[in-house]
Length: 579
Image (cartoon, rainbow, N blue to C red; front, top):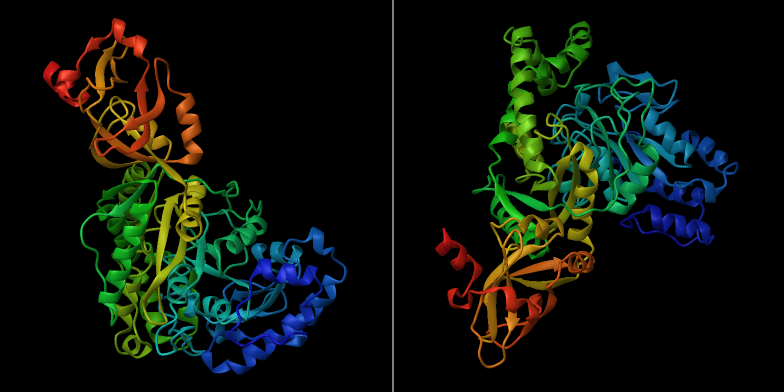
């Protein structure tokens, strides 16, 4: 076997290729993972670390499975220690809470049936209550790249296990950002499916109505390979819902936050610069950008921790806390007990439910066919800073994540460069629950694929503000600039319903016509061209600088029955005059 370096990361595709080519065996991979976990034991990644005793039965089982029929054959994965793995303790980060699971959680069972190997149980912010990765009696999980910084929580160990090459992927959970913040801080992809798309049966609840099981991986491709196995309705799970597997589709528009965003921590300026770079990159894609107020999302986020949903945590865990005084991590108990306040009565619950339902309606209208992009986190902290101020620092980490599950959104968190050396910056794509393909499609384009596009010159009803602008948007086109043609065109008003203009080239005796230049994906351009009715069509339009671009032209015969409106210089000017 070729010795793997400790810093080497693992991926599903590479491992499968190596297995198929007989370059490596699952036994060798597990041996390497056990060694890595031992070497980095003081990183506090594991609660139940990888060991031969626990993993030998899974290795033996692989001999009875056809690798070609098992999509995750031999792939090692880590499991957050609030998710049941049969035969392993589930502690939720609290030793006194511990029990040995008699059966796998639904998602674990499905992954194991597909050939994957659960290598151990990872550290977490106790009872999945926190976004920093420091709230555990098993120690503070170190950041994978800079150990002095926080790892993010609550799925801290799950993220760092993948980032440090101790698993190819891992399971986390996400109620308020726990499956996304650790991804951002450790340079990973964090995929949070729609509520119920992955069953939460066998998961210790934080807020059962909001909890999601999530996956950390090095690529969206790996994350979706896991999704293809884990997704699906579980009939015995009351929270389970049926959603189709996402594909890659581009949204009609990208929504960006309007106004200045808040950044915090010792790298606040670097985070702000990294966000600015992301915005520039998004603007280079052939998708329309719309700036939107994020007040709605902030209102929803406030309901999570400043409203009665904190009582749901207390409803699930309050009995244990009361029966076991003093065993809970102090800051965790403080947060949980806040849900027992008298102000969170039945009336407050219904008031918040009604408020949230109204917000959800507005968000659904806003994001239909669209994707919202925000920083995954507005900054990070050192572990020392979090120790000194555990509440304020933790709250800041949820600034751009807390709204997600309350609003029934899906999310994909991806790496987006560095804020500083070895300090990853990440962004999250948010979409409606039933439109997961849009978040995946945009993430894929942002990370991997440069979309091939073509300019299109338009002079009439396809311009901004006119009825057929929506056709341009539906094709994924975006407005680039205003332009003028060469002084070689006649502009006519065609005898159609509705009225529309046509540009006819007249060498030597035409005028310059005002145009708009749009950019359209080539994959949409063919359909768009064939949808245009005669006498219009797409040809070469000469611009005032002598260059040519594809654009709307009109056949010369149409001028015989059309009104010459060349003197107006543009369709906009003609319409304004007619009004």
